[in-house]
Length: 360
Image (cartoon, rainbow, N blue to C red; front, side):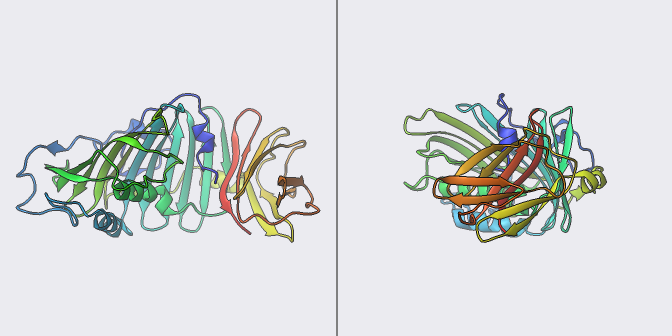
């Protein structure tokens, strides 16, 4: 399935992992420049830092119950406002990603993710959602077919996979910068033989991980590094941080009106043989733009032979020989894909549209 960050991860340089925090913002600039201290190191090494014998649910000095830690973390954050920072680097593939997201409740958020100057921003108020892509000099807007889930914005999958898959042990008590008592847990091996499924890695080895968990049960941070692959030649690092809990405010984006007026939007319909996409809003998409399509079993790249404007359509069908994409028409045969992931990138490498897991 298409990673919604493919536009970002195609950058040639590896980004440094950024930790940033911001309780209230409507600025579309790189949020990593506004350090509010959320990434300050915790005070460690003091066994009296927590109150009495208080521990996070599922953790004591003898054991770590991964499932209880995961469940408590999500339960405590459910419906809360918070700021989330996430980053990863894969030095072997020379790719990386940074994310900064402010979340209120279950559907309101403002998210930035990218590498260096390539950034995609998405804003949602629970009913409307808009996206803005920029390469530092140019901008484009699009309206996603569906709301990205808050669980994706919060990187819930990363938390669940890492806490469940790694053999964490109690390390020490600590105190967070906001004076919340916490504990540090660490891991140097997998919890089982199955490894884990995250970003397609296999044969995980040489694990070095730590997590800081408040006594309220919220995982404030995770840092993990590991090698992967049959020869162990893949190297990956990732960080995750939660801050400004109950102090994060999501303001309406300053570019929302422009995105609504000029953002590329499609409507999807289903025929007997294909999913059909009709462009219903937005500035024209240039000739020779790249249309990248991924289905459950295949992928294809089509170059637009003419400009794509409102009223134009393209249809995607799964055939025995691959993906069939037909402009302003429908394939003669084939089957409707279970889903379609889609990106449209103009010849000058500007992202014009992106949608993941599209169904009719």
